[in-house]
Image (tube, rainbow, N blue to C red; front, side, top):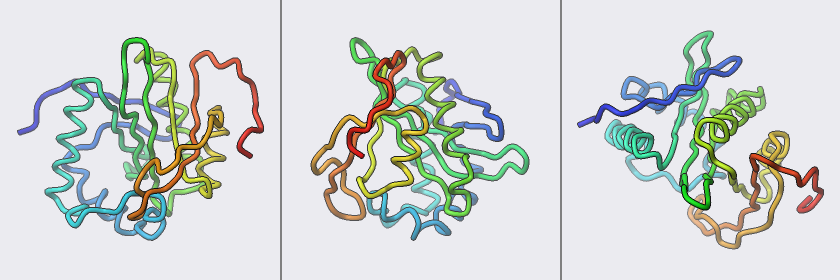
Length: 195
């Protein structure tokens, strides 16, 4: 059963960022399937039911609960001109109290990569997190060799902070990641650390 919860909708120049819904299943599964080779090297192994309707139903239900209880904000990137699904972005592990922080994750379909969509989405979500959610810090991690993701984060104002050994299981094995963070009141300026 799907619970009626508050909804998040963020408008950018070219997209609407909104939570996933069951009618998105076919577009999501098709985009993920077409982009599997492009995405698999950067993601955890897909479960056997990853592209199934049941697996997607679980994602939609999790998104509703997470947004409702304020622990995460999973959003689909939908291009307004043709209502096409481009990818997804999630502000996860939202922590309150003295931390006021969250962790950013994202993916985009191969055919939509390097067209500025994810930069637009990251900037909008970070603004929303600082302005509407009153967060102070947004963290992100990526594989050291993922030059495109590192450049994207840096172009969005994230600063390199260090390395986390065996941080996540990616493509079936524990992988070290580089860590980045964006701060609401960042006085650190540009850094060449980690380059």
